[in-house]
Length: 73
Image 1 (tube, one colour):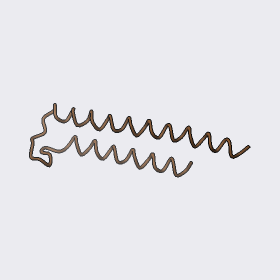
Image 2 (image 1 turned 180 degrees about the vertical axis):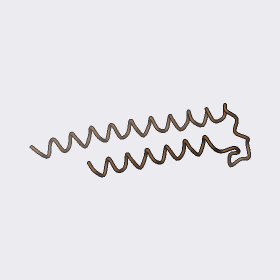
Image 3 (image 1 turned 90 degrees about the horizontal axis):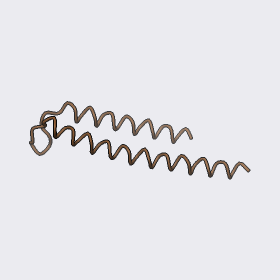
Image 4 (image 1 turned 90 degrees about the vertical axis):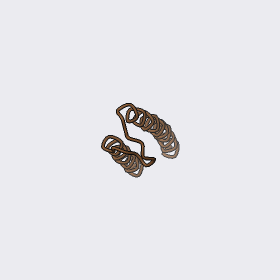
């Protein structure tokens, strides 16, 4: 379970850095000036990915607890 927690902390750091990067950039890689509307779309996409990762991690947690419970018996 320690590895699971370490991976989750890593994911949180990655998403925090991504959010900070989106928030402070003035021009993206294509050269488009980042308006508040475009930043909100980028934050929404990052949020959707974040929710997907959270759901996957919760399913993994349930699976690990189930396997751990069955091997203890």
